[in-house]
Image (cartoon, rainbow, N blue to C red):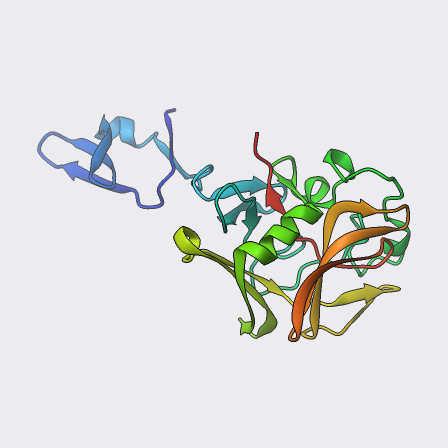
Amino acid sequence: MKKLIFTLLAIVGAMSMNAQIVKIMKGNTVVGIYNAAEADNVVFEEEPPFGQGYAAAKGIGYVKWVQLWENGPKFAEYNVGATSATEYGGYYTWGGTFKNEQDSWQDDHNTGTSDLYGDTDTATKLWGDNWRMPTNDEFSDLLSNCDVQWTTFGGLNGCKFTGKGNYSSNSVFLPAADYCDDGDVYGQGNGGYYWSSTPNGSDNAYLLNFGSGGQYVGDDNRSHGYSVRAVLVEE
């Protein structure tokens, strides 16, 4: 049985009745010609355009990424634990993987003194090797390289980060998911807290914090439950 895998969503088949020939089209290009009997055994699959703005994420398929400045990281379109940009996603301790509904999530934080990487990184553990958490420097660069707007998108308050110059058509929305404490979520819509992979001392770690009054990179205790926005791992 032949198996064809296409990276474009539109697949068009046309049959010549006289010759009993089936042509398989991708856009305006013929990518396969089969007789009618053989075409019955052809299996077609759609495959998202990996490497063209999408990357695989464990358990959820493919996630779109967006680059906001030259040589900058490629930010996922939505939060870890979400399935769209209009969901808050999960709340995680620093390096943890328990969501807020887990009773023991607060004991899940990383206690090391090195940057989170690989099997210590929340995004990598939950979404796979294509993804990681941003660094403290990358969050600082996000603020300096983008126009930032407190806005509402899909019914959620949050910040829209839009690139400048050649990247002015690119943007990502980070919802104001606020925080989780003792398994309970508080303040949704008031502000956003997004973990970086960078520690600050032995107890705290750096994070991006924003609200209607402004944005900054600060730090907080690792046992708090905050959002994670992944960036693409590149060789």
